[in-house]
Length: 253
Image (spheres, one colour):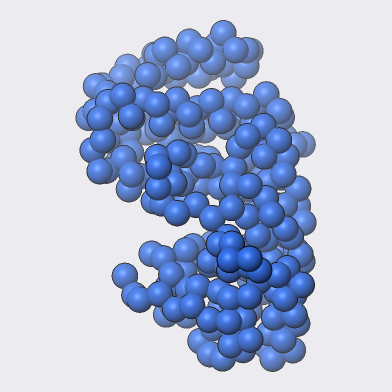
């Protein structure tokens, strides 16, 4: 991993950082406008660190819509800062902020802090993606506890009527903090206008697929009957009741 770089926001006008602030290409007026936007949010410095990369610089994450870095705000707080890409196909972060705040209302997702057109500030999760965490071969009880937490969060989203929209791609959307608490992240594609599929999507990823995550899980918890899981998932999709959900927990965990 490349070494971290921490810069006061005034220095973001320098390359290669300007091209990250306005990814993929820096535009002088846009750079200055965004620096002023960061000042309005109380951001004093930005740290480029993490396993991702943008313009050859380490970042926490690089998605289709934004680049995620560490922000330091007045008072010394450390937050996650999502910066809107110029080529990301989104005009602003207001929808994502709304979806995150709705998720927060049922205790799901990193805590929302602030939003502007080009930036979203939220709780910084200092940890690893779920797939990396599972690969460290923790004990069975810890596995069960974490997976139960993930599924309960998905249940709360289903009950609330908010569909995350990307939990079938869970490797990029499930983060573990440094004390082993799972977080569902990235609500940019979330919606309250379509049929919810949070529980079914994450179950298919964790227990039905043949990927590395399901192999980790079955290696610790033992093999599961995939046909039985699929049958219970069908029942849950039809009824989406708490009793169906608890039967799904029994079969999976």
